[in-house]
Each structure stands twice: as C-alpha cells, then as structure tokens.
Length: 406
Image (cartoon, rainbow, N blue to C red; front, side, top):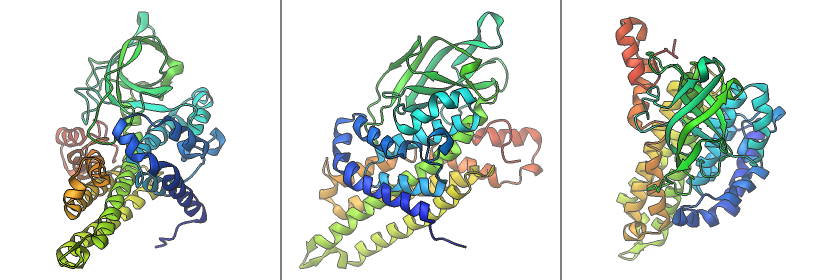
C-alpha cells in the first residue's frame, strides 16, 4: 500500500494551502458574520483553477484526480467551510455531472465557464417533502401539448446552495408523477430563464454566506436540449453526483475538525492554570489525543473513498467517509470548545464558528442517519432478501428503487 502523494497531488495541496492561508483565512470571520456570498474570493478561486479541479482538461478544467481534489478542499475548509462548500457544489455536483452525462452542446456552453469561475453552478434537488427521500419529487415537468421533447416545469426547490450567484442550475423534476418511480429527469437551466425565481434567502446556523436560496419554477419551459441524461434517469444521475459530493463534504468536515484541533492545541499551550499550561493536564491531553486520532482515521477513509471515485461501487465508501468525517469534526469542535471554555463559547470566537460549521456536515447531502442506511444497503446480503423487502431496504436507504449495488 502506497500512501505517498503524487507530485501533482502535492503541488495542488500546496497551492490550496497557500490560497487558504493568504486569501481565505483573513475573510472567514467576515463571511460568517455578514452571511454574504464571497464573490471576490470565488472569482479568485476560479482564476487559480479551483472551481474546475476535476473537470477534464479538454473542457477547461484541471483534470485532477479525487485524492488531490479532496486534499485541496480540506485545506480550504480549514480556513473557511463556506468557501470549500461553494467549490464542492460547483465541482462535484454540477460540473462533474455535466461532464459525465451532459450533451456536447451543454459541455461546450457551460464547462469552460464553470471551471473558470465566470459562471457558478447550483444543484436543485431538495424539496420540502423530498430531502433524503429525493425520489418523492413534486416538481413536475409536464409535456407541452403532448410533446415528447418540450416540457413546462412547475414546483419549488429549497436550500439550493450557490443559488444567489449561480448562472445555471441542475433541476430535477418528475416527468410522470403518477407512476411509481415518477420518471425523475434532470434539466440544466439558466438562472435567467423566464419563470425561474430565487426566493427566501436562507439564514443558516453555520456555513453562512453559501448563497442558499429557494427556487420557484412557474411554467419554466425547457426542451430536450436542456435535458441531462435520459428521461427517467435523473434520480440515478443525482445519486452519482452525490457520491462525489459526499466525499467532498467529508473533506470539508476534516478541514473544519482540523481547524478546531489547531485552536485547541494553541490554547492548551498558552492558557495556564495553577502555574502550568492546561496541556500538561491528562484530561486535556486525552481530549486532544482523541481529536487527532479520530480525524486521522477519518482522513484515511476519506482518501480511500476519493481514490475509488471512478468506481461504480463507491456509494458505501462515500457514505462511510461522510459519516466518519462529519461526526469526527463535530466531536473535535465540541472538545475544542470545552478546552477553550468561555473563550470558545464567546460569540465571534473561531471555535464558535467551527462548532456551527461542523454541525452542518452531519445534515446536508444526507444526514448521518441516511448515510448509515446507505452503508447498510451496501453491505447487507441483498440477494438473500425477497424482492419486495429488497426494494424497501434500498428505497429507505435513499438509494432509489433501482438497486445500484448489483
């Protein structure tokens, strides 16, 4: 087993560390306090190639592998979780999906711009009644005048990250809402399309400044030229995108957790009680040891999942990475706040921000409970279950009716 980084991975990691330290870190508290989308930083990230890290070079991207990508996101999240998530949505959920499933015309129109940061992508899957149960889409794409290549979209999407600044959104809608699988289909829609309205800017507890908004679709007309992948395959396309997205969120969680460990270590050396640093006390040492161990273990699982991104069997590994990294980050932020005590609990402290940011990683792109269901579905001997029970386990795991494991 070779755990050394390649020259390309190490070069990318160093570039991300430098960008994070010199450009992102000084603005992290401001982004959080104001809750404003960091337009200037994202434009700079685009110029550095960070908006299209995994986009093929032929379409203007960096063509980097997922291990390098995960390391870059970890470094940036160590400075600002918000900036890391903006990059991951654009990279993993939008650009990669277009590169994999989009038409040549869609690639030509969008990928160069997404990779350069001159356009930002959004991923509109979640609805009020369709979070983990994403197949329960109530946004409908109704054929226009019985046509098979023209649709009118109506519905509402919620918590759409990047929506505030996005130029295009991947929108998922049911073409046949009366059917069992609803024939969910993906459409790539410009944000200035008539009938597409941004509403309800979300004010979240953590990862503030992400540009989350709800989208209302009122008779938005699309054609087959806007469709991404075959009719009825949208749910499988969304799951493929989320596999990469969950690896990216795991990397983001690691960055947040490591930043919390950094703060705790500095405080443990500096803060003195009874004439010596609190780091000299076993109680503090044990907390720091647990933080470091859990985060290091989570990094190994995350990099394993990243190395398998091109595999068709990454679903369980991606869920494991997100579950382990997000919960390790949560525990690290919690212990860091305990170590800093009142200095960490104070509103506006870095640890207070990290505590709020870490909590989000256990929720978006599938809660920890949903990840456990995905993992269970990937390891259970499904072939021994009856068909009806088999479909129930897969559906409840958030994997869809069609079995992606077989």
